[in-house]
Length: 344
Image (cartoon, rainbow, N blue to C red; front, side, top):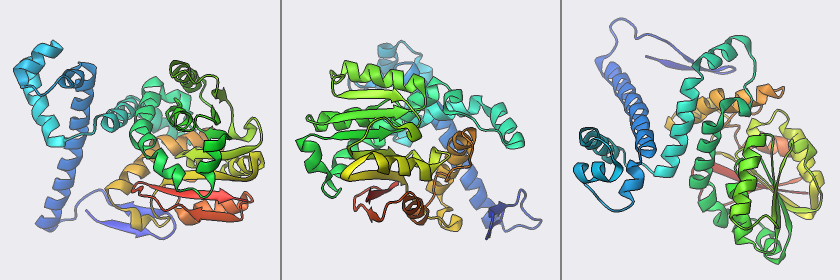
């Protein structure tokens, strides 16, 4: 199998190995195929473990197949092989469960994706269903929430304002985990999360109430173009600008809503604007996510969006078009993300 990178339209992939192909090349392809199959089936088993209570039972302490089967009221024969599979994968539960839920939802929508490819129609976020949204929430809890303290402290002049008490808006809040985490860290500040998905906003409101933060944290169903309020010291976009049909307009509205000297924290997936520099497992995953989730969401709202890996140059261009003269790359340890602080 050969891969050729087209200058204008991206990589072209041939579908068959040529006659007389190098056995080493064929072996390499077979190895990649085996990795793909093991990841797919392994993720399925991880989800089975979540749904049958195996992971919950393991939280009580290490156990062999018999003891774990007894704890979880499952079959020892199945549990034995499940344990072997999980030991080989060494998964991070929250992240794997989140991506697994999304993968399961996407497989169930195969016919819808085929139709979208043929017709060019979009697929709104709400069309993916609650399992997909729950999966995104778990991913956010595993990736974004633990990093928030270091991300916010690395922004010029922002943490001190939040410590003193300020207004913050979180765009594309989903189930609200990052919004609530920021509110817990900065007890004098007030936070608003917005999202176009009313089911996600309902979950976020419930989470804020359960955390005892409803007096300082609110969630609204809103397009970013209609972002309520003014005078925000910080507006955050956590891995969501590329989902929007009008990213320039979104950042322009965020700029208008800022207090003098306020900042936008723009977090996007790391990678290059040059396709050939992203031909690796991480790039492959993000391009698949773009085709299955991000681009269909943007198309549903009238545009192809930026794609899941827009690259720093494209993000800076969007920020400049939205009227931000100051764009600073934030120096943090974030291997899967790029962080930009935008200021007027």
